[in-house]
Each structure stands twice: as C-alpha cells, then as structure tokens.
Length: 246
Image (cartoon, rainbow, N blue to C red; front, side):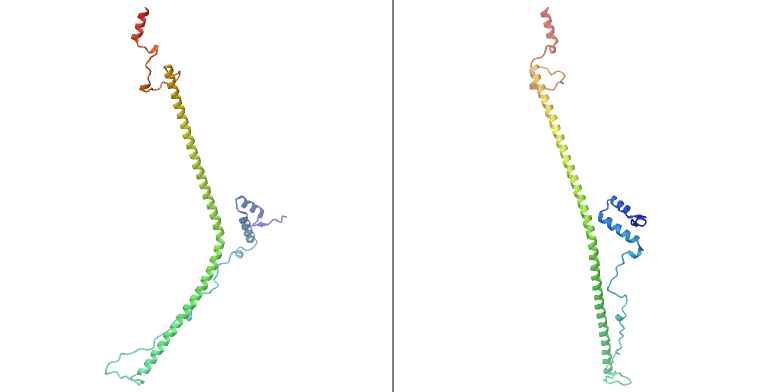
C-alpha cells in the first residue's frame, strides 16, 4: 500500500505536476497544496477563516441614556390690582416661595438631563474611537496582504508595456530600414537608367544612329545631327544619282 499523500482522493504528486504544468509559481503551488491538504484532512468549516469581530462593544440600546424630564412648574397669569401677591402659601394662593422652589426643581431636572446627555455622548465617542482603532489595524493587515499581489501585478504590467514598447520600436526601425533600402534601390535604378541614356546619346553622336536593339530616344533640338544616312536620302536625290550612273 502506498504512503503517498492524497488530497480528496487524488495523489498530491499529480496535483503538483498539474499546477506546475499550468505555469503556477512554486510558492503558489506550495500554498495551494498546503491549503488543500489541510482542508481535505478534516471538516471544511472548521478550517475556514473566522469572521472579523470587533473587540469594542457598542450596544444598540443604552437605557441609562434615556431622558425622563418632566417640568413641574406652571405659572398662572397675575392680574394687576386683583391678584394677591404673598410669600407664604394659603388655601387660595401657593405664594412666591413655593413657586420659586418649583422653578429650582425644574432647573435641577434640566441640569441632570444635560449631564446624562453629556455622559452618553462621551461614552459613545470612546466606543467609536475603539472601533476606528480596530478598523485601522484590520485594514493595515489587509494592505500588507494585498501589497505583494499589487506589486506583482504592477511588475507584470510594466513588463508587458516594456515588451510592447520594444516591439513597436523594432517595428519602426524595420520599417525605416525597408524605406531606406527602397529609396536606395530606386536611386540606383534611376542612376543606371540615366547612365544608359547618356551612353546611348554618345553612341548616336559618334555613329549617327542608335545602337542595335536599343529603342530610339528623343533628342533635344540642339543635339540633332546635320547629316543623314544613305537609306534616309530622299527619292529625288536617289533618281538623280541613277541618271548620272547611266
């Protein structure tokens, strides 16, 4: 019986060969194979990364922050010359002393409510500060995991751009070289053509006729010769010569 490690029933060696054949980097092959072995050896849910949980507790409800202030003082309007003003309390009038104490009680309730609001805001601020600190640590950890992948992707992209730039440069150089060779070829053919015309003209100047097999070329007005060959003489002259011979 073989002792080879199996990953979900597949030999680990075959998985490694398949990954390498697909062009996967060696470090990635090791990482993938390691996770596959760990997950295949036990419960998959037990090896999953646990969700992120905040250490700072922020309750949804805070009963101690609820306000229950109800004012107790209610002042009736006085009427000049009718309402009796007095300090003490009587069956028909509570007096100014009781009225002022009711105002003091209400002011005390307002102060207590303000203290409660202030304390709750302070507590909430501390909780939010703790949450922000935890988020900062978590985001920093994620950045540390992403940065190598980002650098790898940027390096790959840079290499592709350099490759495209190099290919474009080589293409331009080749195109320029082809254009240069084409121009040199055209220039050479033009020079040979001009050289042939010059040689043909010299032959005509010396022999009075075009070289055998060469097409006649136009000759400028000033370059025409003043003599003609025997075959080009007019009929009148030819008849005259015949009469003299007879």
